[in-house]
Image 1 (spheres, rainbow, N blue to C red):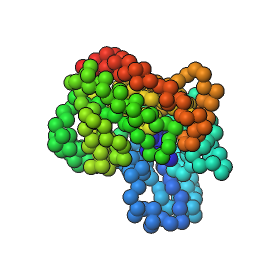
Image 2 (cartoon, one colour; image 1 turned 120 degrees about the horizontal axis):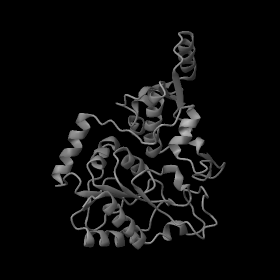
Image 3 (cartoon, one colour; image 1 turned 180 degrees about the vertical axis):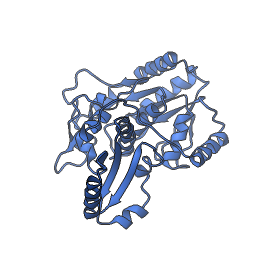
Image 4 (cartoon, rainbow, N blue to C red; image 1 turned 60 degrees about the vertical axis):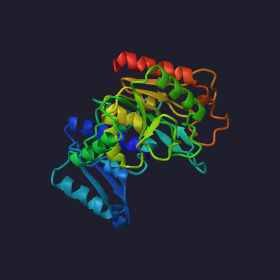
Length: 310
């Protein structure tokens, strides 16, 4: 359950509200105190959100009693959505193989799969983010410190959280792409906001200075994003930002397709497409190595022209 999944859940909450229902996200545990006191930034993505009725972290007996009480009180407009294993609506773990999955999306967007699981009508596929003023102020101070003005920079996401991820694009390809962007679009600065990525020449690194929620303000103030499939895709969609998305064929491209996003992926000659192996590729990541820097740059050119972000 990555950050992108939690961002998709904000769209589920929006659809629940439009359906006239209250959505309760729940996490059942026998170690309530431990879970509540640990830093849990993924759960924080659902906080400060008027579409979310509540986030429950409690024992199974207490949770059952809550539901019984509400039913007896005729409060039956609540929808309960589990925060554990909800990704199984679009992918099923393969027993004994870590980070290998059977894909179940069948071309459907992840938000559609979540809404179907919750029995909610699908009216919107856009994530929603509600930042607090203090989060905005902290991020804006960092932008000013690095002389990054609104819509004058493009965020680039060059790494992934999983080691040896099949979603990763080779570093030498990124270097070639950055060279072309700086040569033909010098008016844009390139910015990294995610920690743990390699530092690239000419790319401003402001990662590690904020929480994940606070870093979303950087996305909100950007001109566009360039990223592999992941949380930044959903964050860009939340703020209506154009994006070029490099999609590994280990997954279904339809899982995270949004308007204003240019997806780039290898579509031909891949008998292994949809393998569901997020790591340990048996084919030298041919689906990502097959995406040339020239193809991505052409997608960037199209993104800039179509969205008029000169």
